[in-house]
Image (cartoon, rainbow, N blue to C red; front, side, top):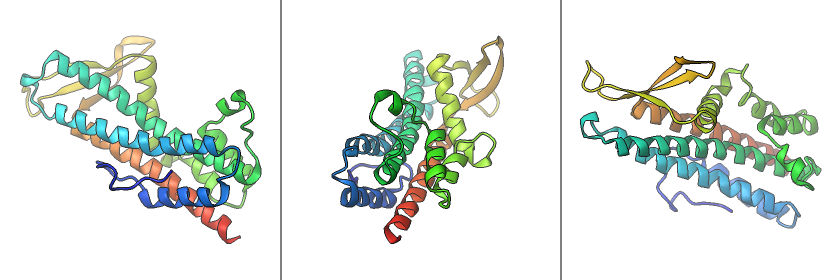
Amino acid sequence: MSVSSDSAEVFYSFPFEDHKFISKFVEEHFQQNDNIRHFSFAWNGVFQRFHGAAELASMLEQSLASSNSTRSNESRNLEDQTIFYLYSSALSAIECAYFSAAVICNFITEKPDFSSEAQIKNISPKNVSKIYKDNFPDMELGDLLGRLVDKDCPESAPYLRIHWLRNVLSHRGQLGRVIFLGNGNYDGDTALITNPNLPHQPVAQIALDQKFVGELRENLSIVVTQILAALRAFLEGQNSS
């Protein structure tokens, strides 16, 4: 279940040490648990989706680095597909981390219940936070998991940005574009995200450039790193108690 930093080139920071620690802890303490399969699927997904996002980010950066005068409509169509896959992979990596945390809680407390598909589908980042708060009220993990996705907490900004753009791309189609050809200091594309109730009124304009890709990389790394660090600290506390 563990992965190595040598197994593939990762283009932005993945918390390998925390991932390895948690993998080893689960193998040593919970390998015989009936729900180990749920953990394995989700835990492998954390790294695979994170690494997939890294590869997609690199592809997108290379394409966006080209001048508008040399980019074809086909290139832009591929960029749009890549942006969708990129944000879908990023959100999946985060949700796999939360699901992994839920299974670890089940290993220790038998909660949440994994006995039916309906109960498994009910597991969400907010629910995982509540489960830890209810079962481990004196531990920091539940509060941290909640703050990372709570729109009223500043710490949730990286997650909410990923979640918002992924939902726009999934449910409202691809980003509209305005194309600038050597206009002033900017030679590139701007994505327009429209209000569904006022389709001619954009609610956001996003420059599709390397900064756009870098923001996604940073946000994903921030969220996953915090989850895994907090989960490791929680397990270290369990090990010493």
